[in-house]
Image (cartoon, rainbow, N blue to C red):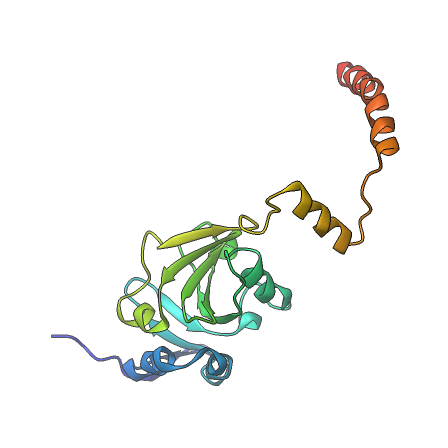
Length: 196
């Protein structure tokens, strides 16, 4: 017989933990992306048991990455094939993983897919927030995305356009020739220093 989780506040010294009820996960499962940050703020600190993990509802400021707002944009633009807006759903603390501080960051993209972030890898673990709460996080992940794997320039032309937009001047032929002419001397000097 399945036991129902009741909303309880347990005090350990002056530390409060708020354990969620089944309807709490349903609120998140039915929430659209635009409303997710407000729902997260309203339920900050709530702990929702998943299959083998406990999700602590929090925004970015409740994670080891607090104060690094640029990460949300980076997660959405520097990992995935197509840029997505991202929102933090929460964190899984003390997760047996390669994550910094053993904390997995749980993210939702604007299409509703759920990801775990750990050590410069974004793992797609559920196709929807509803699946995440009902079926659980896929292990192994559905797909993993490494930092920058989809945003590297695909051609020399694209690389030059990126450099131009960034204000980095293209190396002229005379500069290239100068560098090339000094290459042997530099190598000889490095070899000499290495032999000391």
